[in-house]
Image (cartoon, rainbow, N blue to C red; front, top):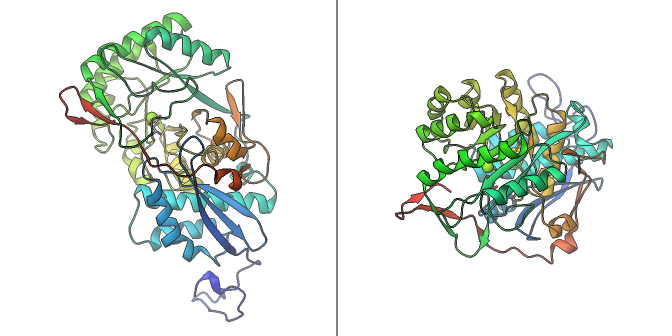
Length: 429
Ligand code: KDG
Ligand code: MG
């Protein structure tokens, strides 16, 4: 007998003697759930859940380049078993979808569960008339430190971009630069305020040279420190491209420029490889934007092989699961640094900010501006001021979706680029 039988009056008496279908309080049944796919600037997948009292909640379900797999998972397999459930039972519904699937983890499953979880936190906040961060224990800080993305075609261009970010008030800045000899590299793209790598049509092919990259990056940070001094927190994303010993060399060569973090130095499937990097360098390491569960980062956290865990609300099971990851990380002095690129919708950004504001071991939040049309479709109460963000005090997450406007931006198939070495060998992007 499931929750859908609430209110029938036919009681199932559990072994403990409590009639399981009665509960202590009245229910708030889910009456409708829909997936909305739109492309205002880029593709987004959003789950909208409505309850019997007319409250609705939103959850981001965007999986860049594989969006429709999550749409199908939600529409075909999750929504039919959500209708009639009690929207207030967030943890129970999480476990019902996770354990109930039999098949564990994976980006499609965890994005789908994340969307449900996020929408239910939104509903709970609205039902109780409080912002979600108040439900998560309240604010642990006054605002959320964010980092912005400065990039340029070459070193001087990047120096200028960092200066512009400082003028805008950013207190921490990620720096990526084009590399002489390579036509394109990760993190340098269209637009000054954001970097959106997914393109329509077949995946774009980039060329890669580890040698050129390793010789170049220390020169970039030497120049940035010369220009901006010691105090500006600087970050850099390697984007999964090195082997452990190459990453160790890079971390060591960047030590004089004391980065805030070096991100994804290696693809992290082989987690013990981080031990080798740790043996050689004190440059702080951030990993986890492609992870989707606590099991993906358990070893990295427990062996203290990383300093920041990058899991995102949408890709790692929602607010509920991210809180468990943060609690594990807190024990091992690992801080959070949620992924916040533009392929996570404003719904995810808002959820991340509620999480960041409340969680004790917060480190930093990535913030990449969404395109104007994205912000028009997803109006939101979060704001940026003087390098810090705040989720706002609207009940729930504080994000709304204009469905009529969203329908004017239909889905367009798009893919992230791929990477090949100069001799044509496929490499990680
Ligand atoms: O979908 C991939 C992007 O989100 C990713 O390339 C962005 O690495 C990224 C970052 O740190 O923002
Ligand atoms: Mg990254």
